[in-house]
Length: 131
Image (tube, rainbow, N blue to C red; front, top):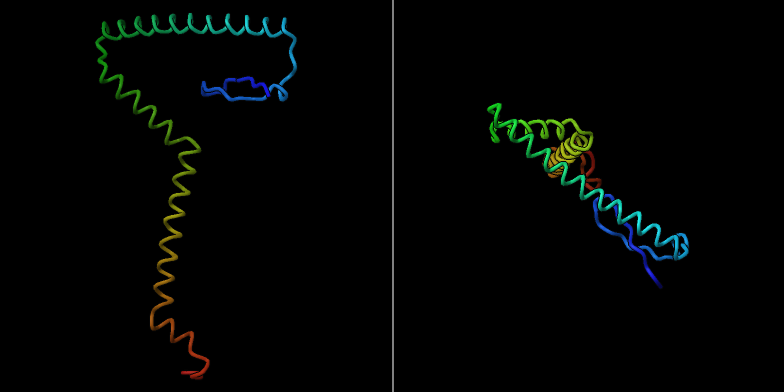
């Protein structure tokens, strides 16, 4: 069975059987391939433009006395702050805290259950009541 490949959001390609996709005529396929080629060329051009602007930005920062270390520190601080306030990070922290608390609680209850005091409350039905 023939397969086609589609790009996912992370830049990798997934394979799909052509039966899952619309059947395209050969002229339609050529047109789409031409559009894809043009779009990829535009992306390359934009990357070059962005790289040039990034170099220009670096030159201006050096002229203003910004050092790479200060900029890196600011970027890391901002990125870390963004991570900390993200829902995913908060959910992971809450989940980890609840998991740790649950594990500790289970251990503590297990220890209590094994204690002599707890066993005396359970009592042994064969021995009768001790109270």
